[in-house]
Image (cartoon, one colour):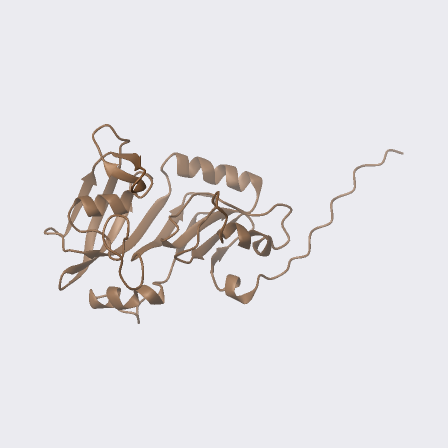
Length: 238
């Protein structure tokens, strides 16, 4: 009688600590969407420091492998971060993001007010660096194609609340595109000016064409609430 391979016992499903569990926007067998806090890197950099990687063991929750981020958000950007919980799911997510099929919606508060109600920014970007300033992105005709659609949702004295929908995924794309138009994102120390509450950029929502589809929405962080509220956002209708 031949003996087959015994099935591997499932790892115990332990709930994440409350502070991490409260950040879970969507949980499926294959996909997890987190509300990433501003100031926390997605990946641990060469100099170390805290990152989402520190959370992965707590987010394993009985799976054989640790969940893995399917894309990146800037350290200073808050909001929707998608993780694959299985290898097939991570591969499928990789294809979706690489093909530009992820429907990403960002909210931002601008220091400055666009003249129109909506528009499109088509400005290629390239990476530059210097000993004095380090690396940064800039608009340059020889850079990689970068396209952002925008729509004004509210205005205040000298500020605007906008919806940003990137059609490409270049590093710092939204920050550079807005600054190049003369309305940098509020609190942006790289391309504008630091401000209380930090960078006012939120990965507000994401939708992915999986089967079944994935959709998640991140709340406005408390540190950004005052500026969004001044521009017309109603906290009672998050």
